[in-house]
Image (cartoon, rainbow, N blue to C red; front, side, top):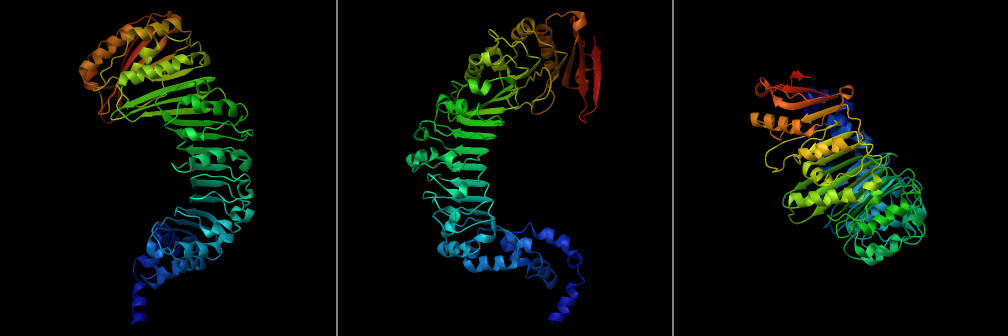
Length: 486
């Protein structure tokens, strides 16, 4: 009977799938699914067992599979391929036995994620091919981590970071992500002093849940290879942490990305705005307030500051705070070429406007969810915001700044689609009041976008000296029609 069933199975569509394609499909299965396909038919079983890579990359996330026997089975079927294993079982009585079993295979382990609380036994085993290690640590990292032998280790991702003064296994780490827990913060703070001595090759550093206890004097040894710096500290003031960027920035010429997540209180932020060529400000107000400031410097360094307040703050209040932060650092904006900001921020910022001699592109956002386009000027008028563009501010800006605007796009849109007919009239009135007269030889092309064709068929466009104004309407299919007035 077994032979009859096997012969019949060979005639089915699934058994006629090429083994290589079948193995690709199996790669999407969990460990439970992979064990199941070995029992479906002889064809599937042979394919699964003949593909070592399927058994070399596994997640042990079910208690019944988190044991030394299942680990040994997987390793035996993985052949000689490097092992990429993830363990996330929290409540298992077999954790210690599993850790001891894993210690026997550390010579072959390339990546390991161990999010089971405790200090596993395999931490002291040599790991010559280990490239990435993720772990939840309840004890300090031992100085003889991986027996001091982990020459390929590049990525360390840990919950809780208590470093020893020396640790040879971490000397090759280039990426460190650490979440600093609420417990043992004093120990973590003292350990941070040794960070760049223990990990001298760090290029990407991400520290989350920084608290006041972590703010010890700057370590004598500063990083010199940083490319990415991400700091999250919602209980700290900006000035507490900005000093690190002041010290580390100049000695890290390749530092190209900086992100700071913090409370809604931006002070002493000059390093964020330094030599900025592009500045983008955005905000969202709901049950909690969120705001962000993004800059790109002349050297290509991208800085992002994300600020949050857990309780409600009026939208205009947040806007004034953001405008104040930009205004306070306007001395750093002599090279600013492009500015994007919500209309409420712009209105507060331009009364009076800071000196922006290099500004050539301006994006004005009314809706907090409006798409940000690579255009010279974007005005979005939508329902529910309660703000109108301050035309006098824009006119004053255009009259006082030495800008080289050649194209202005005014995009009228909402999250639900095009505005109604009244929106056309309001936007064109705003446009008429906002654009100051210019010499004819410096004509600026202005394009108004976003309205349905039936709403603009009979629209009379304003005539403004020095501007070529056109109205681009869209059908629901996305095909534009265009009216033009020069």
